[in-house]
Length: 306
Image 1 (tube, rainbow, N blue to C red):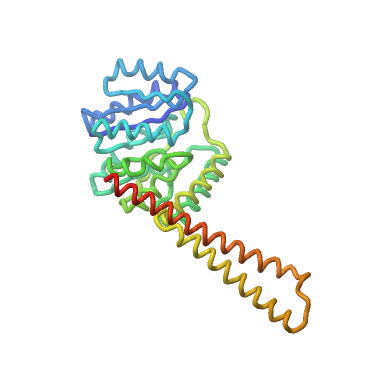
Image 2: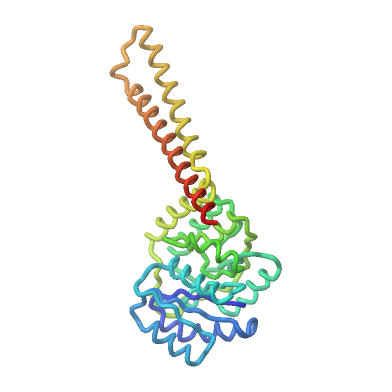
């Protein structure tokens, strides 16, 4: 069963045109498919518009969030409802009209071909120069730090198997929706992308801002840490701590030799640096051990519940 999840914030005008097009496209692949609009606390007539569309298109559904929680939370709620509704494949699509419903077939073909998650790559963007430039930098940085394949990680047009939607949902918060491809790849799923046509926004204003770029970069570091060290945090903090301890002891050892040779060391900045490196090293090592205890307690608790 196919579900298309459309998170929307103040997109009433666009949804009036877009939802019937999505519904028509879904009907060609899955007569029992559903189109779910998640109203993320809109202040315009988004909810009323979708309610009218539901009367005309029985396959259309609405999920309403009482206030604006962000795109990641809206997608998480949409994925959960789709999975509860028996979805086999979940598609996410933006509500601004820039994603073309006619390209849905290309994404589904890759799913049928064995991929677990397919991204609609916007290789020719119809956006402002600033947005195109920051997005290009974001994609290159994401690929470099994550090792995941792809050229357009931030595309909001994706199709995935139900198992992928189930596994990535717990990590959908903040700006994590940008890293669905990275998260799925880190979990061992087969991810790929297919070029799709990209259109200019139909109406309304973009929700994009430069602040989102920096928040997204911070979330990238979080994703990288969770995928690599969630179950072994001491490997990271312990390694950093031991390196700091080693440098600190070497520095203090050198200063000890200098002191034995009769030279004063009390006014040397190197002495402060050596002591600081030892203290930081001890703190990082202890922090890694505490983190391991937290992970161990969590895993033991999960084992007892199962």
